[in-house]
Amino acid sequence: MTDKKKSKFVVLGAGSWGTALAILLAKNGHQVSLWTRNEEFAHSLATFRTNDRYLPGIDLPESIHISSDLTELLTDACEILVVVPSSGFRSILETIKPIIPQNSRLVWATKGLEQGSNKLMHEVVNEVLPGLQASAVISGPTFAMEVARGLPTALTVASNSQEYAKFLAACLHNKTFRAYISADVIGVQLGGAIKNVLAIATGIADGLGFGANTRAAVVTRGLAEMIPLGQVLECQRGTFMGLAGLGDLVLTCTDDQSRNRRLGLAIGSGKTLEEALAGIDQVVEGVQTTREVFELAQSFGVEMAIVEQVYRVLYENCPPKEAVHALLEREQKPEIS
Image (tube, rainbow, N blue to C red; front, side, top):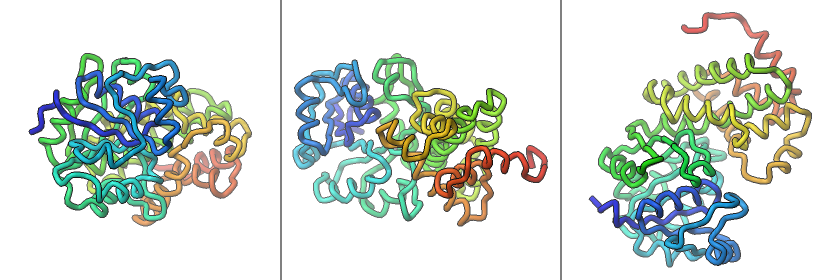
């Protein structure tokens, strides 16, 4: 196994989460390179050592090498950490495929499903890079700014290789950051995707002024909706009760650092989807993920009532109040069946 104190990480994606992970790994003593496709942005990051667009006020360690040249960064890369939106995930894998060394390993922090195919990211990885030595996903209740500031945080590392999961957990670990390991690659990804849809739902309810009772109900019933889909996909039920499920769900549904929650708040207060997106001015993964999760659930015949109503609001111009009433007027049934 590679010595974690001398590991070379290349982080692909200089948004808030990619930058925060680069900072964490650099502070833990690893050799870290950070890639952004924009040459001008790369120059700004390297010159001023701060990512004012995504993490204002946070200094980048001098040890982080920043570049827009993938060939330069990946020629001898050991660990490749992909932190790009799900919409660009396949594209970046196809771009790096002819560049990466044979012994490199891949880990991703991308949340969501692939647009059009509704595939989870591990399926895309298996299609594009079938010969990888090892791969993993990291997910959980993590706001980038809090990780960058060194506030106490925990997340999950999931891999089909227990050795690689343990290695990555050790690389991430420090006095304020703890990583747990899991073999449930599908469940960890599914939790990280669906929670964004539910955060939009919670934001809509709060934007309508429905209060804490409604918020708690949406979070709890949202969790209940995750589990049947997870069972169809052969996930471990316990995953949804852990950091990548309930933990991430609570985080994004209850704190306004969540872009998905803020989008819901804007829609609930009367803004159109376009106006809400313009006000946030960053990628809001839950918008596209809503369509993908809704279609995935439909394909398996799994009922996801909250997801369905968020889909109606975002894609069928259903008024938010009408969507809420549709949920309340559903046929009564036992809470647990």
